[in-house]
Picture 1 (tube, rainbow, N blue to C red):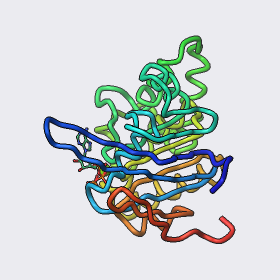
Picture 2 (picture 1 turned 90 degrees about the vertical axis):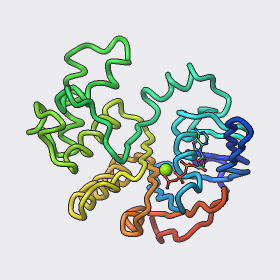
Picture 3 (picture 1 turned 45 degrees about the horizontal axis):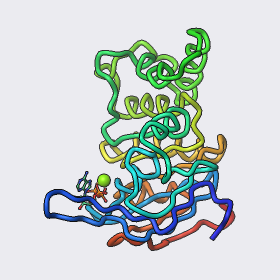
Picture 4 (picture 1 turned 30 degrees about the vertical axis):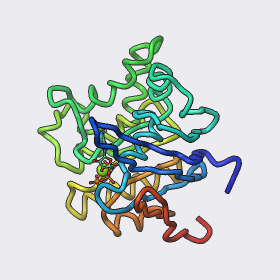
Length: 234
Ligand SMILES: Nc1ncnc2c1ncn2[C@@H]1O[C@H](COP(=O)(O)OP(=O)(O)OP(=O)(O)O)[C@@H](O)[C@H]1O
Ligand SMILES: [Mg+2]
């Protein structure tokens, strides 16, 4: 266990209460993820994968335990602080892209930057342009989501997650709705972002092929983590 890991979960517990029903998808979970690591998270439906992603991304708050991302003590932050941190601290990639249908690819990617004050229009333009370039979609900037393939939509969504240059990306089944070829493109892109751009990536997947693209795979079972494989020299 490393003291300096980028993501550090200690005895992380999440309990959901709805009326008289109580669900504990995560219990006393301990996890370290090093900076620049590409981690795949697998496990049966309902095992708490999305719950864990949402905690790491600061979308949801733990019931108890500690969670650090870099120097940020995520588990102690208020909702307002989390919202602020997320804007440039973490990009989220969804299975179904979640692009705004009436906006162009360019405008979708620009959205997170509009939340940052003091960024000039030309600075925004430069950031969006380089994010679209990075995902190989410079020539589709003016297309709306309905004018793009699923794989292209997901690449726009990745550009949107990247545009504020967060050190951390989380992805919930990012290839779950794609054919094999598009899925491989997305996985190649994520691996490149980790290996060449130093992004730390946590990806939930049901697909063993997708998990193979990651340097490390963990299985979540009944709120606990089981390590599957760690690539040598990764
Ligand atoms: N907001 C919520 N309120 C109440 N219960 C919830 C909430 N979110 C998740 N749960 C419960 O927590 C458990 C874990 O859910 P989670 O979405 O993390 O599973 P998952 O591993 O992502 O599953 P899947 O592979 O189907 O996406 C489930 O039993 C679910 O019903
Ligand atoms: Mg899920």
